[in-house]
Image: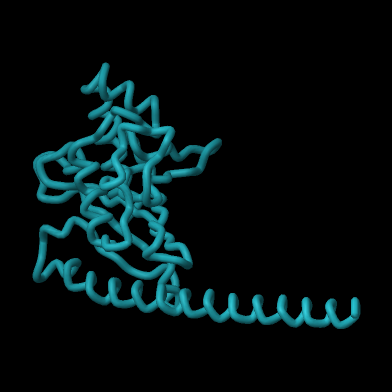
Length: 212
């Protein structure tokens, strides 16, 4: 009896693993299809011949991988991210990495261009991070450790990539110092705005040089 029990237990475990594999594989296919549709849908927004106000362009890091997007933001007009006396701004590159269960959970965004901003983790030789910390990129639900952030401000499966990119552009326009990821940048913005602007403008020029 013990042998039969063991056999049926193993068969049951094997069946569970098999159906779990099918479910995960099905969810992965669903996520990939969603990302493919969103990618195709967002491309026209970045066509500068039709829409010069998009503020970003998108591509795939690997043409066969829809889970990792390459984003390039341009400095918004009339902000410190626009080069003075010109009609152009800086170029800030980022990588958007999606989880296998997207859209149930949000992607992660990291700038690979050096940034100086309260809600972008600093990039340097010690901490090569660049991770963007904004509400829309936080997992759904309430955060017991951050009661100021409401659930409706966080990621929801009904949202799309376009909303994320628009939120980042808004972040560049209006930095929020309430709970900065880069504490030093947040402190400087509050106490030394001219010094903050000078440092950002230097990085804007650097981003243009790096693009050449």
